[in-house]
Image (cartoon, rainbow, N blue to C red):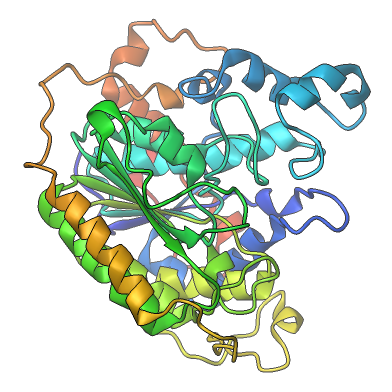
Length: 433
């Protein structure tokens, strides 16, 4: 199938902003809807293919998560949770990861967009795939953690590994990408790189000495940071580390988690990055020309999250956007300045030049111990089983044909009236019509 003329695809479901973790909870899915509305009003949708994600099936989630955990998420509701007290404790669902209305459907949308993006990259139908509802990096095989229930990132990487011998995962959320690292800790097929606050901070993992194990030794890269890191300091470590990885590992696909809680002024964060500084990392990764799946993640000052991910969408599209925000459905959220960018605060940067250099040198030495990019034996590519619904037969003859999967993918292309403003400039995938 010919590649789309637009090299960026974007996944969004209009229902995502309606899910609610509960009163006082810092995680607000509403920020995804705010982001989407902002990039609509900037006109950025005109430069990419917009898809509504196919909801991830129970079978697809079970490619990583345990069957009993997925089944629990499917059944639990605020009304029946009193019947599941043992499982609530076992699966770490409660305070940080509450039971809310539609929690399973929320997971289906988040995971569906990430795996759908991976499928588009696998079939060369996009160079860049974006799912701001994804990036939920703390979820474990049988456990919710850190506001995350289903690890869409791991599921997307597993999809990429069907076609790609080496996948690089980069995490610029303020929190360590522990769930993803744990999933791939003993393999050289995936390199996990995380720049995060370390020391008396959730999740408490990500020491520089955590480098992977077995075949995965040196394929986990952790840069522990202190409070107050600013754009210049961050750039001074991010670019050399990524450059070295690109040289020695030579990934054929990249997954970039863009958690916005590393921005200045985040409700739960303690870093001091501006949106431009955060986006410079995105631009640098994209500059290598490797297919990249771009995901959201943390971010708890929601006006800044929406601005950040809108700006990063523009960067990925090579589009210039004005600093004055266009009028949008959530305009009042962005006062009093109504500006796309944010300023650094006057907080102290506790990351001294010597501290950063010492850790950078250590990580570069570790990376030098990798002797050539690992190769994999040729094998038959599994079908894109992601596009099977729960009631379809995974073994049926029709479903082993990749063209069927691609057709199912294209059927989920956007409904124009839901995603676009009304200027008549709608681009549809022919296969969807």
